[in-house]
Length: 229
Image 1 (tube, rainbow, N blue to C red):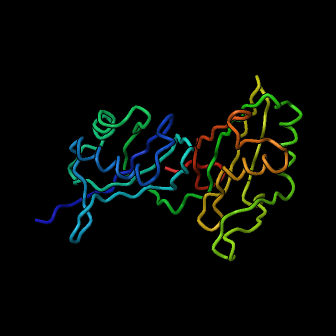
Image 2 (cartoon, rainbow, N blue to C red):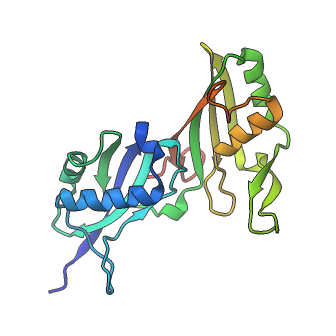
Image 3 (cartoon, rainbow, N blue to C red):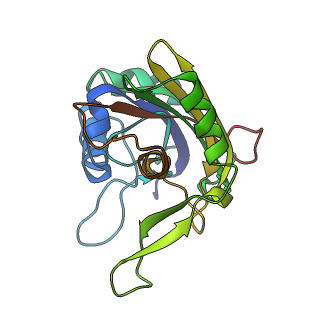
């Protein structure tokens, strides 16, 4: 009898030291944890079967996230309410599965991502926060990697893919919240905001001795107001 499987979506967070693992390492971690937790999942077919895992919108190394998604397929009779606890018992503390549910949407429906960027530096001020907001209201040209030129780089204006950006100064920190494109053709890496601050506002964010920053993805959306689930 051919087993019947159902798709299940896991929403999890990746914070703290887990931000330093690559997407490939995260994939390996989840495969190992599913096995250790004895969660039966459908495997790919062929000579080298592997667990069927599909991640959405992987974050860059160094970026934390409160909204990571992973689709798996489990036997039809699986009680999916037990999956988060089973996985969390085997996961490192900085990766936590928040919920498991039957999805009603597809990853390709994700259009926007929201990030919190925190910058810490002795040179920060309310005036600099105001300059940061003003900066992204005009064209911002930075160098990006591309396959379209011989050098592998080209200058690009990133502002069309930034839909909202606010900056506030408080207690020696600048708190930036931004909504950017998450679509394949216009994907906006939040690190590009950091590159722009380096270039236009002379913040040496590449030197941890003078300036620190963190990036946290806090939400993804199907449109500017509807959370993706």
